[in-house]
Length: 183
Image 1 (cartoon, rainbow, N blue to C red):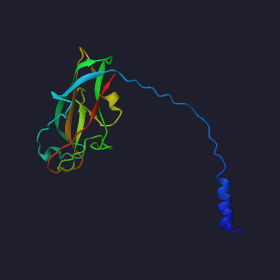
Image 2 (cartoon, helix red, strand yellow):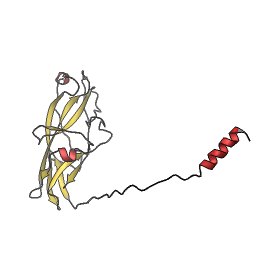
Image 3 (cartoon, rainbow, N blue to C red):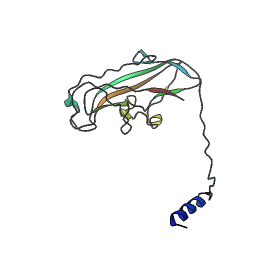
Image 4 (cartoon, helix red, strand yellow):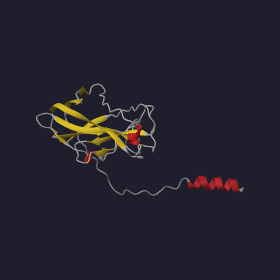
């Protein structure tokens, strides 16, 4: 019998040998759906349509301090009204998506300026803590806002952030989706 035929015969015979498997444990998964609804506005704009936050027009020199330099901080409010349900606190969860840089968590610029992204932050925190869109850590690092008298106000902000030592001029445009995280 040729070597090739022996090899193929051994391969076919060996494929019938079962692999040993053992169960090492169980993972229990829990969750909860709540009957929570609120009317949402962003800076007074109904959330049923895309809200717009307008940043100030800045000189590109405002971001020449190097990668990570930021400027043009602009606060915006997300307001919940008419809330019904059992939740007592709420916070926005800014989601990952095509418009989010998966490394930095910043919002990707689709305008023609170069070397710049947009950075979300929690303006209710003393340190204006950066929010990385899509990062589950934001559930514990951003301010949770009490729902009182069926309403809550959540304070956030957005600013330009340099991704290049010499950002180029032009328009800066982006967007982000969010969900309200009720607890």
